Amino acid sequence: MRIDFFIPGEPPTVTAQEKGERIVHKGGRSFIQHYQKRSLQRVRDGFIFDLSGHIPNPTPKGPVRLWTIWTWTAKGKHRPGTFRDTKPDCDNLIKLFKDAMADCGYFENDSRVVDERVIKRWGTKPGIRVIMETIEHQEAENYG
Image (cartoon, rainbow, N blue to C red):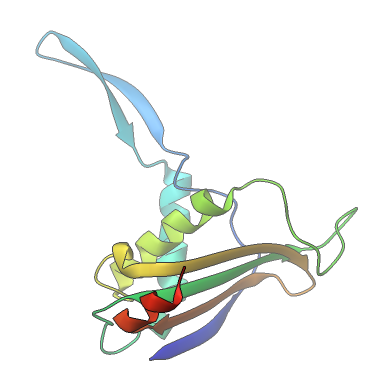
């Protein structure tokens, strides 16, 4: 199974790392409680909306390969076709997206993603290209 689609629009730069913290007092003790900021929840909801039209049926049960290509509008000193080597970091960027994919049913859990590539670039057509395919366990022999 292979899916390949494009989500048009300027990709968000909000990442899963941007969680809020507050001090909570309970039973005479204080502790830090983490919560999801509204801006983060809006991005997650947007991902779920954009992803909902491409959900594979049935949900893959085994390992999957996931490539995402994030393209922001090139402007100023940034030229189309060049890499975006500024924040957000690839690992922070993809976490929230994979969580939204799991929520939509692209895979049972994001631990199913065994081969992942995230590309950040500047271009003339902003958006996120998603390529996901199932892979066989035997393919692991070809790695390393």
